[in-house]
Image (cartoon, rainbow, N blue to C red; front, side, top):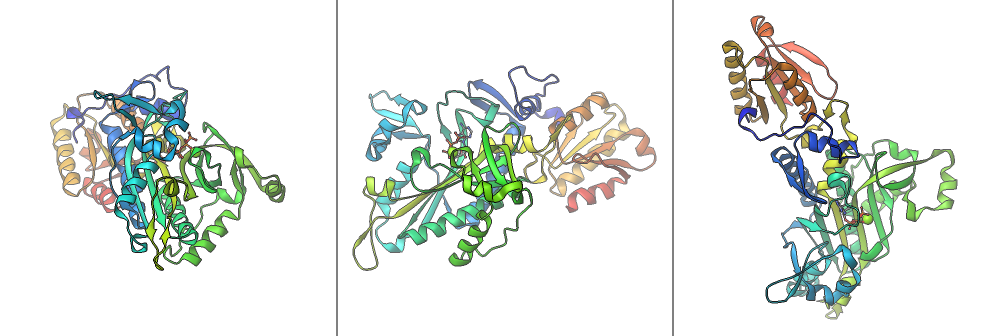
Length: 438
Ligand code: ATP
Ligand code: MG
């Protein structure tokens, strides 16, 4: 992509309305623009990152055996009356009346809808187990939308729902998601700690929140220092017993949110107990037959009698993750994208757009990078070098390649790693091989 033809409105100054660094950087780097309180337009650069985050989430869901579908954002109020949640949900639900005076709502979550869809189709135990998921916009009329996309009113969520024949199966589905979540966050360069959590209005008795440590996080959390190290996630998720033992082993180390603190376990942790603030990037629940029983979902069991499926639900805050990644990875110059979610892999800077030799060399390398399948943002604008460097550092692409007249005379370009600031001079061919080879 040539920057001269792109749409990247960056801001020099820190916007006054933003309190935390990720919000400031998302506005400054031209990722999002607020349209109303807690409602954002995703600009081209932000859209690319959002899609990359969603794709990692999707791949790990698929790997865990979950099946993707897509449910609508709008739902009928009657569906929610079946579970009793239409009245219970409160003012966070955006309720709308259509032209025929029918009550609809913008979905804050999808337990009711997926239960109805499954109820209409599932007949026997052979239709179980299944886990279905979608990646779809949600609306919650939060009292205090803040921190940009961290606590929006409209936000993108991955929500999955599992249906099992019995409790043992449901726990296996839960454990699968547990590990899939840890893998998902690790791929984005994040360490998220699973913490014992309250089940809240979704109900049920087993629940974990996945928390990324950050001083700006909204939750206060307590954990054993063992969680500060990376954990191996190497386990065969098809083997229910092995998986249960693996998850049990992980959760043997204490970690809990404020609502679920356990004095006994904290005393046990002793000196190793840590406290911090954190960002909730996911939340998983096992809630048994809460929705299936209320909504009349049943299938024929192996012995011919009716079975009410056991369910769980599993959310990941896809749009919130972008804020969390930036909180975890930035410096005073801007964002430092982990390669897996970077909007482009390389920023190519032509220092002197008015110099024919520089322009020819930069155009040529741009073409070669593109041909090699490398996602490259080419700053071909007629701007000062200093402004170009500042923009590249702000938007945080993992690699920068700088072409200038001096280097060119010596047959070299400069390759810079954004994360470390490390620079080296090498031929354009060698730079190409290096960024394309990784
Ligand atoms: P919170 O405690 O932060 O309000 P929640 O418990 O209401 O979240 P869930 O219903 O578990 O959230 O939703 C699943 C995930 O969706 C959360 O873990 C979070 O990452 C994300 N999420 C929830 N609310 C918002 C929001 N207002 N803006 C952005 N992401 C959100
Ligand atoms: Mg929660």
